[in-house]
Length: 117
Image (cartoon, rainbow, N blue to C red; front, side):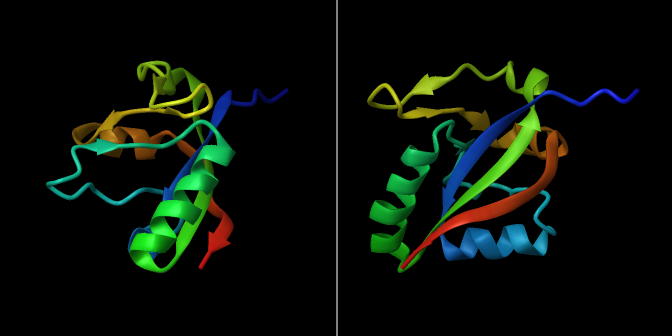
């Protein structure tokens, strides 16, 4: 009998540059944050991720992508859910210095599920 690890599905709206870096990491990790990015913000709602990718990333970068990935649920319990606006605008705030630990808890691959241009 095998036990399946409990995971939580997260989404991340992203632009082309970050997506290229994820591809370089074999779809298994997020790249280190830049100095002006002290927090990594995955979101808990696909619709919210779509809105950011479509309305912000396209406007500022010419393209927006929504990724979906699974993370060990027990590990994620250390990050309180942050409500960044309305009831469905929910995200996690992962400090940049904890991103390596976060990446190590990704289960499977990061997948692109929506693309906007």
